[in-house]
Length: 542
Picture 1: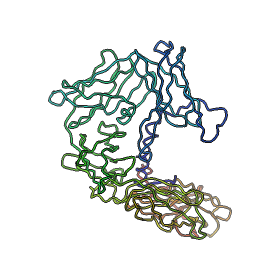
Picture 2: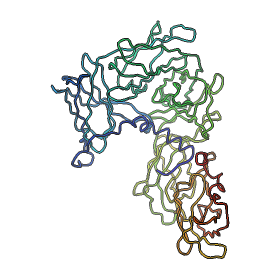
Picture 3: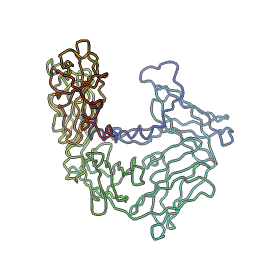
Picture 4: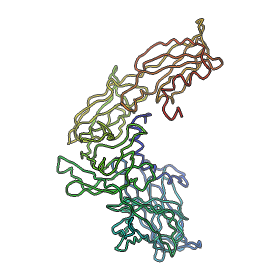
């Protein structure tokens, strides 16, 4: 996928929830010796189940859950796999004919705590996963408000567990799909957790409809395990869903809400909210700055996405300010289009297209302006692509390497029946920047360093001039301004002599073929750095 540098980069980071959450799952054991037929499921998870002393645990039930991405890959749940096996007398088990993917192994036997372990299968791997089972303990948490009164109706939103079987995270949506049921706190404010293996360490995040979320760190699972937490008053955030079509009036949505700092208990992801009959969902959070808010659904888009235009801006939420946010619901559909060469009319394969839908809901200053990201598409060998969009005003933007489209983006009206054909996108090769570097006397500067300078172009490698002082630079893409989202054609090309304090630069346009003559002039030795400081990003200047 091409390099992006605008708010869309934030969008893509937001959708990287699966790799982020599953980053610890990539230790796959061995690979199958022979390559299986394409599409054949030949992955294997096998191992032994033992107790804390290392003795085998026979007749334990071993079941498998497979992770299923939803919402265009932005969130997901666990689905029970069909296979279930029982450990043999040596505690061994083996589950075969598995496709590539992320799996959760669940091991249960009377007298032991249920044990869950995750594993990633890639390349039809055979992966060994040994499990240690321990005696069960049921921890409890005592909850009170700021006045000392018991808190009734609080619920566990997330559990992070670490122990002899590794570390694993169970956000709210995963708790549900793994059938981990936890009652809310009772009249005495006591919140009883399910049984966990003795000796494990828990981090528990707790929600309440009217009080700010709280987090219990380092809760040791032991016979006398107990903890206390105080839940404080905060702000009630109301999320209002609007939908013109009755069939679009969804009852729930996944939420991705990120507070600053990110590790705050008021940061929510892989969580679901419920809408009432009036289309409202409410949650209690801590007042302060939030960097991102998105609602997601498997079959619909909810717009807008509330996110900053720059890294230093936030959605500030407090009572009476940004505590009621509105969203429009649009059905997820597909539109089809084609990318062709503007001169030959031939199809352009393997080009990247970015889809967006218009935001029609009146929003606050930190909403993502006019458009919300829907997804990516890639053209096939015939230059054709299928793009995910929402019914209504949509647009597609071309992002092909070394190519430039005649129009920055194409806007169209996507029909709800999915029959929309997008007008052809015509592209041309991105011209090379060519020229010559010379000294004041007109002689060629041999092996001078030449590079393009500008924001978001620092990844392009420099070149050396040849014996005639000539050079060629091939831009890979046209950068976009982080705030305006417009393509930035005007850049600079810079040249310097690596052995003398001689350098120069010239303005260029990336969309036009041109011959550049660069005459080296005496400069301070660090001139190539500070002369273009404004073109560097904040991170590069730091």
